[in-house]
Length: 443
Image (cartoon, rainbow, N blue to C red; front, side, top):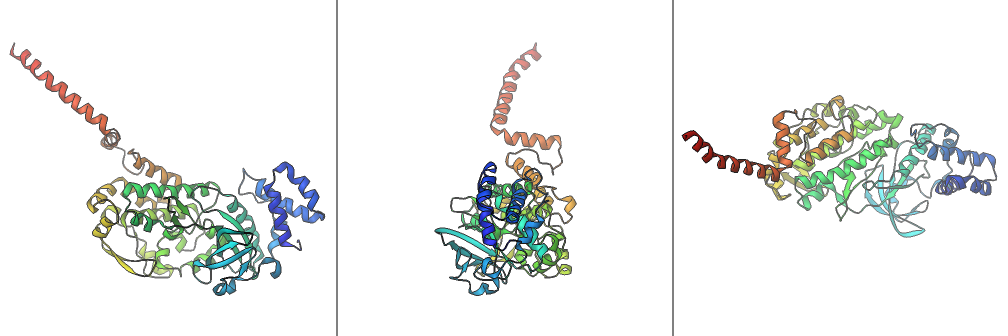
């Protein structure tokens, strides 16, 4: 195990940024210790040498031992146990400005890099009882995958580390925006505009799944929309980094979260099962339900598994939910009544128009995504997105019975202009033939 964690990080990061063919020469210059070099090369192989086999982590065990026991001096200036007094203090090269989110004992803080004072970042402190060397080993492996992900609608993970207490922290780009549901209402977006924005979120999650990363903690607060109208998904992989083989332990503690967060947890997550991509399909379905109707599909009343699971019955169809009345709590703590009048005021559509748009395909698509039984949901986000995209293009979707009348209706909707012209032409032809047929009959 190396005696200087910071030196190891610096050498590894520099080598990682170099073209592969230049790394050996660089390591010749900076690695006087053969064992130190071997550990760096082992981690480089894990990160860049398994592109086609993301699940293969062979060769990383000796490197992951590096973070089993980081010294307090090298790991950080402060520990997360001091989270309530972090303002104006430092974590490595980052100066904490203020708390911007999260709940105790964790938290999310606005910070700036000391060497780049104009670069704002968000630092998330994780509380995972990280004394376990096993946890720290796979934290080291998975964080490298997350830092490599780059997609237009994902908030980039920039850096990670361990604080003085040995607890991990994550540094991501700071996104200035507002939660997606709040954005949609403030801009009075209609149904199709809301779906288009939602598809950006789906694209980000689909990209993560292709790299074998599930979000695992998706909710309306983890999707922000910037001023220019672009959605950004936050906290990607946080649940992976916290749970994995400790999923039962950590998921159990997540049941103490607020009801509006619990509403996004799939039944299998509530039962303490490991995170899968099916959980993200479910959470996306709940999010779409809320964006389209203004209501949550379920109302969570309890805070234990036995109390929550009975609440997750089959949800009311979105088109029917439009007529419901419920009370919601805004982020500032104020209460608001959600009813058809409120719905109309938050979009450029009457409630009756929204109900008509949701009936049929959208009802079926949303309900399939939030089925209680994971086996009856869309098996992938790609399938879910595919049906939504087909709806937007007025094409037949997979969840609606594919009858001749249904296909004809979709064809007509896609080609309204051509259909009208064809009908008019046919009518004109029939009218023009009437005198001719009449004269023939009189002969």
